[in-house]
Length: 452
Image (cartoon, rainbow, N blue to C red; front, side, top):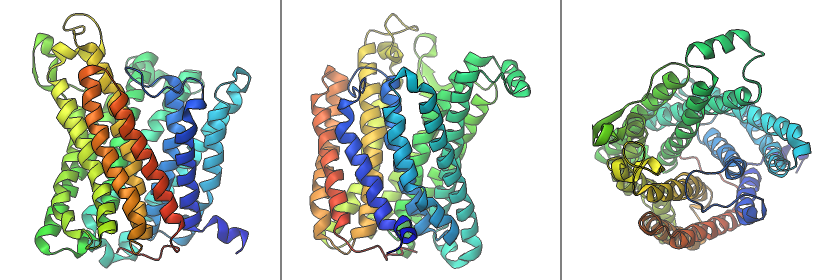
């Protein structure tokens, strides 16, 4: 095999990215400041580490999406060739984050990685735009899934740009770009603009990414081959997710680069603090669409036990995410006079149960927006590569399902008692399922499965 073929071998690239992610999860405690379980939002150290894991995960999904939607060969090969640079730059970005003397080098390395990733995302979008013209019949058969994937890719790319603009403004305050600096001052000033940007980046990126995985999973499960009624159920769910993606993206755009203040809806309580934030309703719409799509996707479940449970694991991550976000998160939002947005004091400034809100913030970031996202990507990719090796799918699927159940129960315990031990056990089970998933893919032949 030539050097060039090695760099464009999808199985090798997928395995390399997955091994990197699993390895980095394993060694995360040795990095200073990376303490996953502590009440409240992620610290800067954890945020940096989180990006070092999730950006390679995004590339993993980009590469599989390019394969499934048959993007032009040149684009497809370029995306794959960036695999090892992204791995190396992500690792160096983590290592050089700590020494003060390496601050400039670290900023340069992480910026280069982010630029490559945005380029990859843009190239994927271009490839996806070509798909309807080059494969018209295939496009018609998976229209809803295709729309969700491309719109999620666009939304995620916009969110990535939000993050990069935030970093530039945080470092240089836009002084080198006079017209932009003037615009920022006209919409509230640097502190307001940066606050809106980082909120939009963090709140938009993950729902967009998860929406893209939902659309990709439906296509890989060949939902377009379902009987009419089941196919319509999937299509309705995917279109609802499409609407959620569009409206979410628009809200975050006008609240970042405009003066729109996202309101709460259905408010009550002191100062109207009990209510659902409008952006949360739209990100939730993406998940609601995914749950509706499951009604039809159940019909795609394979007759062989291992393959079926891998599929159940993949779509089960959506159920776990919605159970956490709606079943727990929405309930807390409608009772913020008690939970107080994680701030001590009396309403509307805070609430007596603020520490339980902080526990939810930490617990749902780890469960919903971290491990479940990895699981959703890993298990649809495991199905893609190993659907014909059903025995290899059993162990990772069983362990992952146990991890999702225990993890959700642990999130409830964390919110109710401030004890994170049970959730940690669930997350460790998910970690072991990831390791088994990689092992299973390594034992399969190169993928020749084309779902469309």
